[in-house]
Amino acid sequence: MVDRRSGVPAFRQVAADLRQKIAAGDYAPGAQLPSERELVDTYGVSRPTVRDAVNLLRAEGLVTSEHGRGVFVRPPASIQRIARSRLSRAARERNRGAFLADAAARGFTPSASVKIRFEQADGRTAAHLAIDEGAEVTVRDRVMRADGLVVQLAVSRLPRELTRDTAIEQVDTGPGGAYARLEETGHRIGSYVEHVGARMPTPDEASLLQLADGVPVVTITRVAYGEDGTPLEMNDMVLAADRYELSYEWPAE
Amino acid sequence: MVDRRSGVPAFRQVAADLRQKIAAGDYAPGAQLPSERELVDTYGVSRPTVRDAVNLLRAEGLVTSEHGRGVFVRPPASIQRIARSRLSRAARERNRGAFLADAAARGFTPSASVKIRFEQADGRTAAHLAIDEGAEVTVRDRVMRADGLVVQLAVSRLPRELTRDTAIEQVDTGPGGAYARLEETGHRIGSYVEHVGARMPTPDEASLLQLADGVPVVTITRVAYGEDGTPLEMNDMVLAADRYELSYEWPAE
DNA sequence: GAGTGGTCTAGACCACAAA
DNA sequence: TTGTGGTCTAGACCACTCG
Image 1 (cartoon, helix red, strand yellow):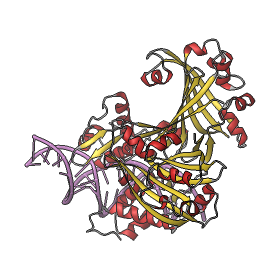
Image 2 (image 1 turned 90 degrees about the vertical axis):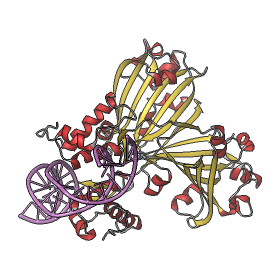
Image 3 (image 1 turned 45 degrees about the vertical axis):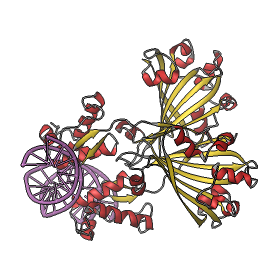
Image 4 (image 1 turned 135 degrees about the vertical axis):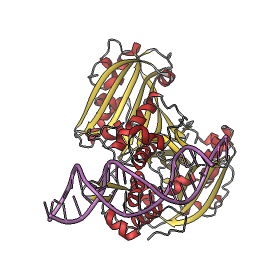
């Protein structure tokens, strides 16, 4: 039952009580919560109020609801660790790009859909690639799948000059991926920088990545630099935050 | 007006229309949306339905609502980039830990509250620190502020053996921070590994970090290793995803 | 068919902000 | 004082799942 005089809204009291019961293990991961109509009786509030409480827990990623079945405590997803050292030249020579290599190592059947297009650089692209705003860039828009499931979105942009007459402008970049093609034309990669952030997904991303409510996406913008420090490529990646974790390692000095 | 026969729920149609208008710039960043009662007239739906639509946009982080004032398009927050190379021994010698150095460089007045406690290692801690589950660990629980505002939560854990009779078990670890104290007792740091993820905040985190609805947190677990590969410290950090971005850099080889 | 969550209404009253 | 969002109710009907 909720305390009507406490000043705390009823739906927050209900949410807090359910949250506490979940944390305490009264409702274990995967377990079903009482039905909304039961909660109405338990707490002495109306159904819309119960639904407000459940909506709150959904937005927190604590529970998922399944139409016709019930509301369930979200079990922790199995998290894949992605180490960011796998971009070495040696690894690339053996494989067809980092993603495919990664997936194969885990026993997934990887696949990817690629769309090529050409754009004028916006401000952000221009800044990262150190080119003029409006300059032409080659865009490789990829949807990556493991066993048919979408696991990553990636949009790669390169100055058009670097890709003209190379397989980078083709759907299939050939063995070793786009980085190998860059190196063949004399653009050896000297270093990488990744900018990592997180945000809530757009509705498009949520449906593509099949994200439950309350699951953010991790965004990675990787810029590959030549040995002289020239930016060669910018890659915007989007991953489900409940399925991936990034690992970076570096020496103390 | 919503299309009643389309099969798409009314509140999603309203949300989609508002989302599109925001994306198109009809409602610019910082601008106020029409009041809920106006939207009732515009779309021909009831107020709870309008509120469902607005709630959706809030959970996406697109808008914020202010009681008594209105609903506003969330302007993009200014994002601080945190480079992860600043942990060099040289930098540490000049400063009192990485956080304080960082804040000072940006013109903030940094401060931190620290609580020390001792715990038995849980499974995750034991795995990261390569110790037995249940072994004693020293815990430094910190709330970091810039100009009085909480900007980061950090919980650092070390095997108790490494901290006994050192300033690491004191609130003030002294010049150079805990890492400097470790090195003084012969535990030179050889490398760092950071595991980066994201999730929705707990209610506690949301209020401490003053997070708006629809803003995730970035989580960083940093493990510091000795030169022989022994784990020395595990640090769990939590940051507001709309205010911070992490940058990692590494050479191609 | 019974039980579940999903959607929607037409109100009501409250709390807060600003003029 | 007026207008805003915040909370809450008592219903209704629909869509989905499962026995």
